[in-house]
Length: 105
Image (cartoon, rainbow, N blue to C red; front, side, top):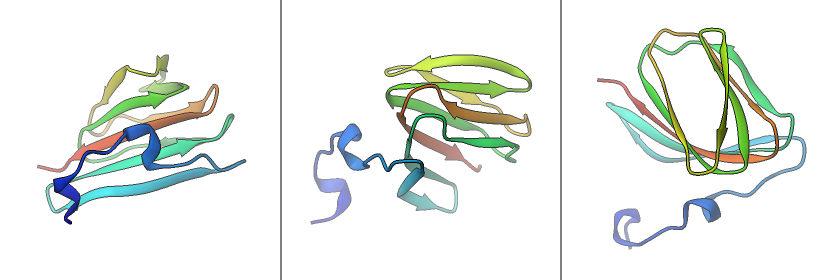
């Protein structure tokens, strides 16, 4: 059965791992990717930039997302768009899961 032909529970697609950031790519195409991540508390991604827009959907928990120097708290059920070429960073206030959708075209 292909991946497109069944229903998934987003929260169950990836498990937390102590002291780590875990990721699983769901879709990888030339025009973009969809990846789910699980961050243990106090884990994160340091400031970086990307040449394309990205959308973060928080599936579980709570994260601090900083875009262009402005931090914001994002909770389960909320989303943020990170614009292309703007520096951004993520940190787990508490353990959290997210789905990252990057559009390259």
